[in-house]
Image (cartoon, rainbow over all chains, first blue to last red):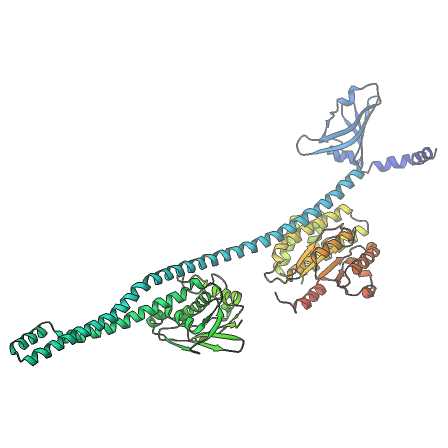
Length: 419
Length: 218
């Protein structure tokens, strides 16, 4: 009963509602004749049919159903009910909930957009859009993370390659050193025997001479003198002794070099252990001795003669070597390099100072970056100091300080804490 | 300074037309003159979106248009997002959130961006996250700061309820608040909750983060 009265209340406003519907956009109303001619249409119908109220010449058509369908059911007033598609067969199509009525030769098309549904769709789309936006943002973040990880991996890969190279070099050096050790040992010991034997031989000759002299046989003496003269025995004795002396110095040097090489490569010592740091530094120096001599560099070591330190000896040698190589590259021929070791209560400092070209302020922050190098292409990998950094900082929990005045001096100070 | 009002106007026009490319171009023009993304947020995005809000409040645009304007601006935030992440990162986390049922997420994203610019890691769960879920997420993430945005004053009671729940779950969690709604709220309301700071714009937020970062190591 109440429902009925409410409907009546709306009906009371029918005239005004009808008038307003001319301007509305949610309900489309159009009146056609049986030829399909548009006779009157409200704002919404004009929009869907792509025309205006003064012209009433539709640009769009009834596609499904088409207009002829409205003419087929002559006996019912309601000739169509359902979803109707209006469009131009190419890029425009509207789907509307419609009812079509026929009275005599007039056809009313009454089509509505489902407004609550549109609002619902709009709401869903907004939410989806927010989700897409949030996902996109997450994606960008992940991309950044991946890029960072990739860069890190590349760096690690290069460091691995370098350390693998160093490792291979170490193995080669250790292998060669090991192989050289035996021949050096017997050459070394043979040299001593040889020196002794030669001395004995000449001693024997001198004794024979003495014996002959005592017999007074001038002829024999003459023959001996001639033989000595002919074979330059006096000179030979002097020269052989000189040669053995030189050979001994030489073989001593070879022995030291081989020992240094072995100590430097220290393949057997990849674990932390107690070593004499000074001895390690000496062996590292020996690797660059030739370079130092070639550039006529004044090199000096200042520090204790012995210094026990718990460290990774092989790696530490490499760290010091890298710093030394840079110092040698930085100085002019005839320049100065010093390596100063100081022993403090809880740490040990290794300070390499050179009077070379120095490090400009603007690159000071970058010298420990992998691949950063100021050396000509092909001559430096740019990994030396970054490896030194890793060895001192990561492995030994130490620090590296760099002080540099351009064209005056550079001081690289490695500090290693004592356990 | 002359270019700013002109660009804001252009941005607004493009927003209302739904022209995303146009908006993006305005943002880039702005950055060409003033490279501060923070200023762009405050002087162009915030001003424009507040104006869009006003147009809706005064019945001149639909909610759909407002959504579109928001979506376009969010899209541009994402375009710029890649540029704002600095090399220098702190090991600090912020969770940013809206009040339950609050649909406006642009503001809080700008807040997240300022944190990202300052080297923080930001986490955003999206809008429509119930407080119970937020509590769970905070427990997992263990952020240093929780930032909550309130755009619509209508949701103020919900915010207070949310703060009470969060405070009882996390008595010491630092919480910061911001958003358009706070132009109408006296800040002493939050005093009694403790460790709650109201930051009314991105500049105050920046100062606040800087004061924390000053004592941090990367």
